[in-house]
Figure 1 (spheres, rainbow over the protein chains, first blue to last red):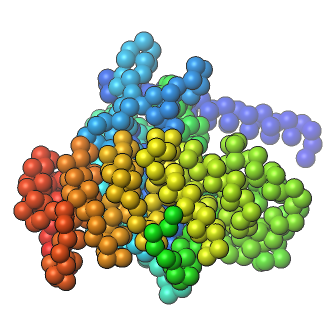
Figure 2 (cartoon, chains in turn blue, brown):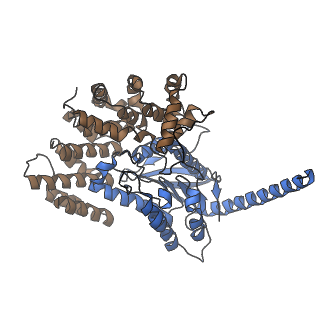
Figure 3 (cartoon, rainbow over the protein chains, first blue to last red):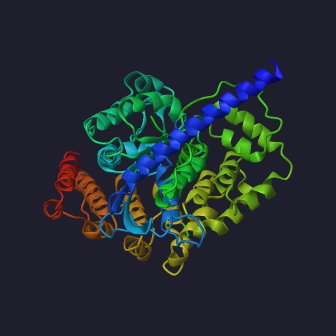
Length: 270
Length: 274
């Protein structure tokens, strides 16, 4: 390629990148207008069932504790805003904080829900409370799509069949069986149904859910196209496998962006 | 002090549960790789992230981690940095038991319980007494205020699984702990003691938690009580302090939110059916 052609190609790329960045920023600003229009921001942080099959360990209970530890810590001057939340005395999963956005006070209601009762998948399967806990976590996620402003999921992608809040389906060797997840895609189907039922075509695009974050492995590849067909919400996803502490940090980073009126990193629009 | 003798099988079961689990949170996606794979420029942190993937990659990463010079001292330092989750994964994946005494010192301040989970993963017949005694010392009433909820949650897991009977005074302290996560873990422990090990003591503490402020704790207490009730009715075991069916019905019917009331009554129905 001649230098002239290279220069032309580079300038074309830079124009395209610039246009795309501008569009994203304009979308983000539209989304923010809607996000901060009301006096209350509703945010859901839902941890899926984080089993480690074939090992029996389940980790979401401790991940939730790590998240709660951060959001309830005292705030440091100049530090992130993901701090200083207080817990509701009646609802162990509900946290509240007052913030100021453009000089106006807003109340942030943050639900932090996880899916497992204990850290042993085998024991959880025999516990009736586990069934309720899984259903409750799933409802927190799905109803969040209809009612909340921001919904963040931190869990397994289940080969594209997630989000998932239940003990996994296993094969004969005790590993997670991909077939039912790949074939029926149960989590995605429920998520799309929740989007469909909350759709109001005549309303502005950001009237309902403003941001959906799926902090699970390769969530971009697994879910992006399907979600884009039904929702204009800003979408944060991952192209790669996610280490659990990276997923936690990125969830906190998105929450911080929401609390400080900045555009979350990696937020994409339709 | 341990109040129960542990069988080697039960300790093995705990290890089986936990040893792979600390490297757990990658998805079920697997890499195509052979055990001969090496990553010449990888740091211990890069390798740590590979420990939780497919078996081949995990084995190769562990093999390479074992060749790194000065790894133990790096891991010790990393526990105080943002690399803490990676360090804990490596410690348990490499089964670095010589670090247990150091780790036990950090258990009380373990904010999310992951460090304690790493210790649990390295428990064997030989070191179980040291670990479980240390946990029981941490849970003593005079120590409890200095112990993080995350650590308490993680400590109660092996104590329940291995049928370690905790003194009433300790259980009472946990049953009124400010953290709902701690009280939920106590219910989990009490369920394990009653249903798995046939120990029906201190069920009055479960009954007390039927009056918790948080609906999640009330529901879990109803669920555990109903299971115990179902089992004792079937086996005709006499318990003291456990809630009767009428008590549980009263609790359920007092729930204001319809969904919670229904869930509560469902627990009663499933408990009776056991």
